[in-house]
Length: 239
Ligand code: ADE
Image (cartoon, rainbow, N blue to C red; front, side):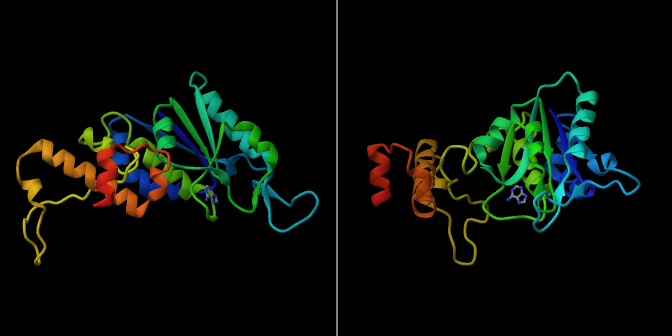
């Protein structure tokens, strides 16, 4: 997979791209990440990328030309790829696991990160998706893009050590994940449920499913609104 990040602050990505799982995916050649600083396409000696809004009002807006030129430079470098162009926008569609799964199947993702008050509206003609990290306003789109890159890259084949671990994640099954325990069996007076040490895998699977369901019901009942519960599941919730 190819990823381009169009940003005025490319060095902000050093941390997330330079550590742990995403960094290893880059080293293994599973994903290639390019950072494009659109300041280089700014106008004049000072490489200006923003301007005041027509009609007046507070704050500065990103001008269209530097972002159009940045997109053209990506197209020239990778003319053959099919691109998903994602605008980081607090007014966009809220990001979720289903979107991460969709993004992870794309050939080439381009993340456009804004700063300042907003964008010239014509920038939207460059994009296929407008996505928000959540219902709050960040100082720029970079942190949102980092989260979306991380959530998408970890789903690519051969990125996680254990292929099964992405499938049992909270959210991927539509339920929150069940509790986990490791050694020691007793710690500061706290034990481990007997069933997990029973060796009975059918019973263990059942316990995990039940705990996932109960956890979802108590913490995120909204996630169950569109799910048809079996008789057994309805019984577990009442326990
Ligand atoms: N830019 C500023 N706030 C944002 C948000 N919540 N999501 C995506 N991009 C943003």
